[in-house]
Image 1 (cartoon, helix red, strand yellow):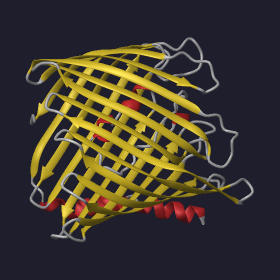
Image 2 (image 1 turned 90 degrees about the vertical axis):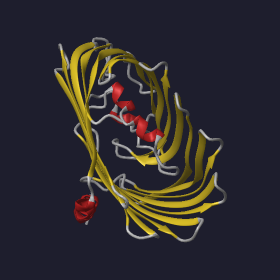
Image 3 (image 1 turned 120 degrees about the vertical axis):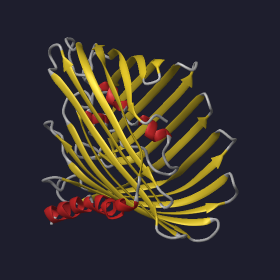
Image 4 (image 1 turned 90 degrees about the horizontal axis):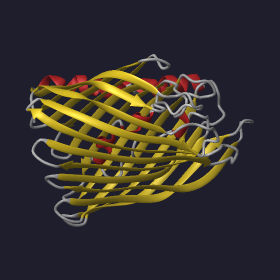
Length: 403
């Protein structure tokens, strides 16, 4: 029964790709570009491993290509990222790969379709916490931030995540709309005592525009988690939330939603234990011509690699400052906490804090120098380890069409 359920969820991952292939011929290419970077790095504990002899030095190269296309009725974007980092000793070579496909199409005056798929493979190093953070700042109100599973950090184990999403929007009237979304992910962990799982979330949302600057929405999400080769920890999570999205000024926008989260989790003997917690998401963004700032926070019940549904708290901040025509400063900060199990209290909580600053200087139109520093530390883990202080410097070159 469980294997059949896993096969059904995996088959749903194909739907976004099928929808994209069906619609792609009508699109014409708009923009193709890539950013190629290379440089050197030194860190005291890049993977936040236990012990004292954890420092590492490396050279790295990364490539971030992007293809985008747009017509009157559809948009398509394909983004990728690959980083290869060769350490001088101890850690040998580290690789990170990620790709994401996003597609939307207007089927009629009232109906629109969206689909997407993604894949990521990484070893959860300290700096990877910020990977994709700008996507959070540009996200849609009411859509949860990517899950941060602190239990996967501080181990150096590889994590692979395959995702798919499919949704539609229906305009019910001049001020009313409804959204239906399906999100599926296959989360695989290589480490010992970590449990891979499949996750499927169905969400229905109703939006009402109260004014030009204010929207309210009611959303109900149903999430099913199924761990591989075991029933213990399998969960059903239902979270209805009421949300608000408001433009406070020409540059400042706020979105927030809150509601109960009901979980039903399978225990070792096959019985189910039910619990209630709070589901909360919030985001405040200020988008100015020379300065951008975004702060986001969430508190949810989420499955984790330790085989249980636990309370997850995450706070992220990102800011970009244009110091001059050639100089830019990027600041990031993040806090993530995996709390106690929603049904049992015998799992130790763990918290991860991270902060980074990067300054870049454009010496030619396509050529940029950059230097960054990063701090990261795992706390409440019960294991002695050094914090990570990291310095990275290099050069970036832009290929293809510039914005």
